[in-house]
Length: 401
Image (cartoon, rainbow, N blue to C red; front, side, top):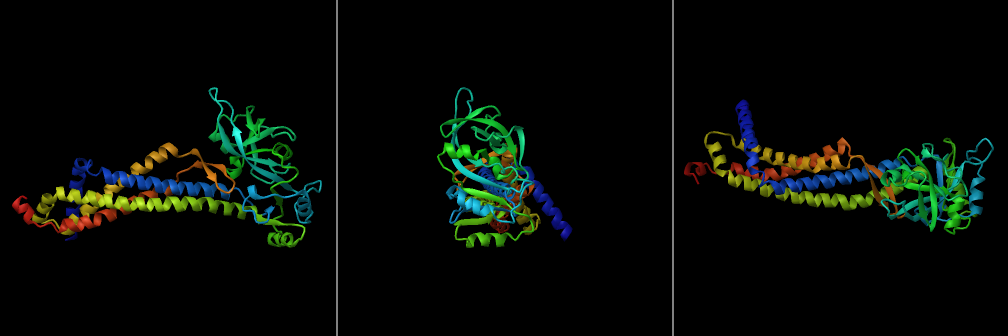
């Protein structure tokens, strides 16, 4: 019995494959709907993965970030020299060979930037400008210059993260950009293990303070501690100090929170949209399969009349629905993979209103998950039509209706 059933199922699936090209035009809506669903889901998964990846590479547990109490990001913070000096006097801060504390005082500016000319035209955009003190590179163990040199303190010079440089190729070493009404020289391009800092432009802290009229204040202070130091105890000491009004968090925790804030918006918008589209794709698959069965009712009735098992007929209908879904899934996935994989994309960081650059990297895992969703849609869209198919009376074949 099993061998007979299997042979019948294989024969019916073969008939379905041979006749499928004749029904492709009628199946277009279902295929297109499923392609859109898989493309949206794959895009959402890739965006979330890309954001999490660059944020995970941006923080260190042994580095503390100090900002103004109540600030959710550097852009909202302000710290004054007396507070900075108080924190830098902590005895457990890592110090260099000259007994100077290892730290970086930094200021973040969402700067309107005029890019170098391309074909005689200059375009403007918003870039993250970070004014940094001398220890900024030491606070990022993966920091390195790719081309050019480091900026010179006191001069209007910048180094550009390679994420920004990939997105805007006109930012070459030796070119000038306009920041805050002044011309700044691009002195070098830097890398930092694909972290969020590669989406920024760095310059000398004092020069940025002067150009943007920030006085001697900064927005964040990064301080390095040894790995065996009780970071929580240090944080509590500073929170209890009446001279300080600061929020203290490990760099790793800070960027984890930033990542959650960014990806939450993507999930809230993208995943519900994908689910709504998936429901529409199921309806399209149902309509397609019901139409296919209506056009093949006599053929199905003949199969039943000559002894094909009803379950084999039903499974062949489900097979066709899943096959259409796989075709739609592949059509949705391939253009994204071919056209966007490895491309540098940009999205806005709501916390500081600047752009974050990341590589649009589509992993095989995400493609498999998107294709599995397409298969699930095909399965749901084929079950009810399959039940309908096995209920077609044999009299249709006998009467020739």
